[in-house]
Image (cartoon, rainbow, N blue to C red; front, side, top):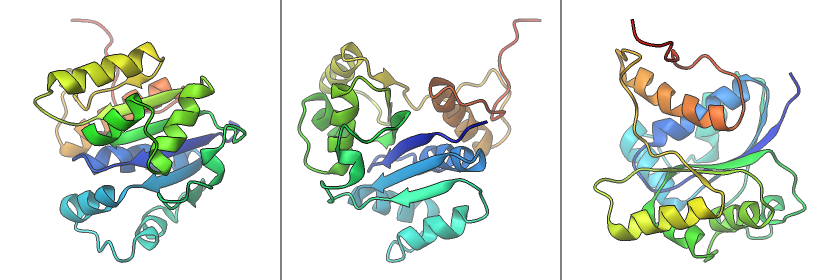
Length: 199
């Protein structure tokens, strides 16, 4: 298996475990992950994982240091980062979880930070971009923005775990969603049991 390069962004929606699971599996399989988080994403990590956000990158390095893949951080305000350019080669970008604010700005070409700029690059270069929105209920505005992105070729994977695989833990539900993302990235995995037909 040859290592591939992916951009992963986490934003200020509930669902940080989804993003962490995707990152962990990519690094476990020796891929290169370029990671960026919005300020709101750090706040979500504090609330959902009790992380001391003052440590920031150190927490990710400690969590994933045992994995063989390469983890590269990019400050969200660094518009001059490598991933802000169309000349930066990568397999795909995933925004997981994706807030409705980030979704709206990407859908309307408003690049105020590196997450939005990197996503804009993926769209203009016609490279795979996957959005994992996490909100409920969804307003007409949210749905219109998702439809707009879908017409641009962006893949939308709502954070809606299934139950046909008989999940027993929260981790099972998280891994199902992470697996769906990896399926679109064409990365083999064993994160959930696939449906094999009724019995």
